[in-house]
Amino acid sequence: MQEGGIGWLGSGNRRVSFYIEPDFDLLFDDDEIDSPTSDVESLFPDAQGRYDFMTLSKQTGLTARALSDRLWQGVWASSVVNDSYGSVRKGLETQFEVPAVATQPSGSARRSRRSSYGSWRGALPLPGNWFSISRPEPITDFVEREEKNKDRVRVLLDRYGILFRELILRESPAFRWPSVFRTLRLMELSGEVIAGYFFEGIMGPQFASPKAFRMFRQDSDADAVYWMNATDPGSLAGLQMDAVHGRLPKRLLGNYLTFRGSELVGTIGRSGKDIRMEVAADDDRITSYFGALKHLLYRDVQPQRTVTVETINGQDAASSDYLDVLRTMFDVRIDYKSVMLYRKTSS
Image (cartoon, rainbow, N blue to C red; front, side, top):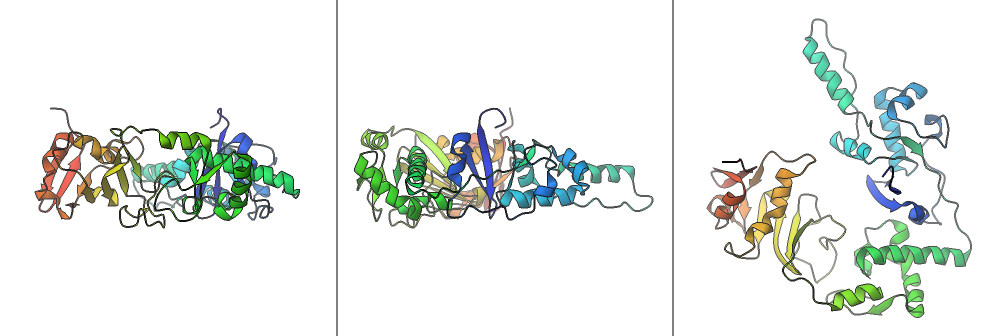
């Protein structure tokens, strides 16, 4: 991010948007561009400067905890940002809080003091440099605003290929249906967008780019196996559509979906506790359908030490037909009705 022209921007309710630098002004709705609501000017000696955390601490005289709180308040008000995503990862690990430095009682062990200091320092949002955001000037000219909206539509079409109301409900306000629908109709008239009934089960207008329309007409790789988190932008979980109602899990962080081509072959709920497979245990690709479980145990960032599987297709995991498959992939320990999965140890 510091070298590639990609940035991130925080907004209310701890949401993060990513953008490439030329598209930065598209993130702000011209009807809602206001001065930052958080008091961040006093944090930065130079409004154009970038400062690491320790420099800001010395400049402001604030405690690490107070400075961290002020910075994150500014982040969620879209008025402060960092040129590294490492600061967000650190914040996620610590719930965006820095613990107060407790005064050790007389006679306490030196090891305890060092441990306390290590925990405190480990919670500091140290990566990268912090700086205040210069928001774009609002556009009042109708033609210019319409061109800006067309750029937003192009970003959405590059992301999804097809657009309909339910799909973009979770986008930021400037990218949601009420903001772009008129522009989509205008782009349809110019031939840049195609309107039609491309997929069943979607109520209301659907718009696609010509490139996406050609892709949708091609035969997809029916054997490609892939999985995604239920909260992924590409996931349809949680959308209010008859086509997916009751078929997909809730749009929660601990839920995963696995596909083979366009077919849903399995879901994992509650970070592995509940598994539902739509194929038999002797399927030729069965082990690849448990890729999300391997991710939970083997991922680079905060891997789980163990995954506890309680049910598979509504049955106690310990007596499931899929238990032998799991044994080929993980070290397995059976605990009455549930199954504990661990990283596979070399024999």
